[in-house]
Image (cartoon, rainbow, N blue to C red):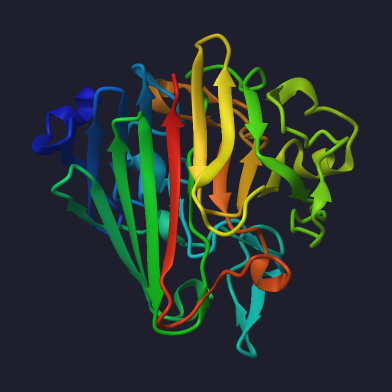
Length: 357
């Protein structure tokens, strides 16, 4: 745990080799108290704040492999969702509107003509209610009220973070509503398995035969396109930088990779979505999920204007995101897997970041 937080920390519980340490992380500009929690076992350390459910750090072999800030202030300022718990709808909704049960709902436009990651004040900018679990996990809950950011229904969301003895950070999402709504939850960690430099030499495998091409606003066209014969084929381990500058329309639209891959799976079973390898460190991380898709983003809009932990400058392609999800713009694409949550239904989703070595 970072020395800045250790002075405020108290050991709260241990379970199966996991130690949970908590402390104060500061206050929001409205005066709300924010906490920070560090979960540690024999192989992984994860530091999480209840401000936006953000993964502040994630260490494997002592190396922090995610981007972020040393203090709460960095997260209160504009930033590209570093480590954030994203909702009510992760990714984009085209033209910032959708129709549900015959009613047109308009949500904030914060990405050109579209709505991105829940709107102007999504789940990433909320103070969640924390609870330290007897088994060493951390539970965060939040009630998103009817009409918040334009979304219908009082939606109760619970997210639980656990470390496992298998070197995993396990994130479990659950939600319910009293009125029909749409929901798509993810974590927006920015990974660099070296801990510094760019990510172009990382080797990536995605278990996906198809991806969803986008238009100029990065909204899926509705087509499921085969990856075969395109720069989007990561079915075998491939260096991220190998084809990222190819003369390809989709790469030009995303300024690199910023697309949703359609995972090869049936139903909502927990299965592997991605495997990321960093040759110089030997570090390997797998992503497992119950979700049908994964957004692979190569930090194309990081421009060196943000200074993160230790004053480190975050330049273009200094990190990548692997966001497990339902597909972007699903509320407006009836052929995509449904994101509708109705009263009496329970939304459940699991994602695991597993460090193999």
